[in-house]
Image (cartoon, rainbow, N blue to C red; front, side, top):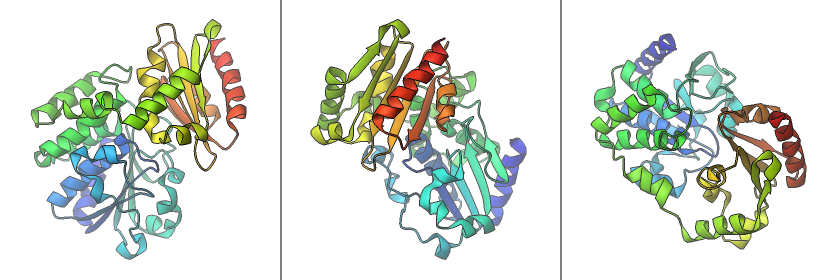
Length: 329
């Protein structure tokens, strides 16, 4: 990995036009790892642009980076010499920004930065750190290794620590390591606002989000006591009823389902407007929900996994229960 980080720095030095991209339906890890590198490259006078199939969510805006993502960027016209992707485990996760511009990606130097064990090492030069809690933690290490730490502003430091917080559930999850604490401490030394992300993601709730959570907890939470499993199946009609959307489900599974005292495995399945089903699973350390997500070709860590399916809610529920039973046995 260190060798590829040195290659990345050489490529940055040579390139004049640099494109940054992250996975579709970007989460905060994908967003802020990209933003940190974008800001630093701008400071060293590189012509850098960032793209995704969609804009970041409004609640990412507290670090003032939302404006850098351009879903309408003409990638062919920009013609980047260097492309860096963040937090994507396979090329299909880069969406139409990739699929509509394959020849541009083929002709440019392309680096993949990610921390998922599911990454398929989909390009020639990959910087994959599966022992890192997040791509943001890995991104800090890259910045440190290529000696660009002096360019980390309080804004960049706050961005990086935000997803280290959330990916580790404020250092609670088992992906937290000694290095995670060390990086967080260094970012605080660089004037990261460590209180702001805690408020934005763990304290603050919108009115519609509160209605959505109440509706699910009161009327759609199911349990299998003998298995110590809790879950919810959420149709798109529930989002319509509560005037909310699926992105407002963030943290529901971690804050409520996973914290029920006897629960060992929990999951939430929800239906998108295009009828695709998204599923998020959590477990206590003695269970490995990555085995379940692998069956559905998802992203996974042992205690936190995700996948998508084109089957119905009922079909996904039936198959998940079957696979969870195998894991418990």
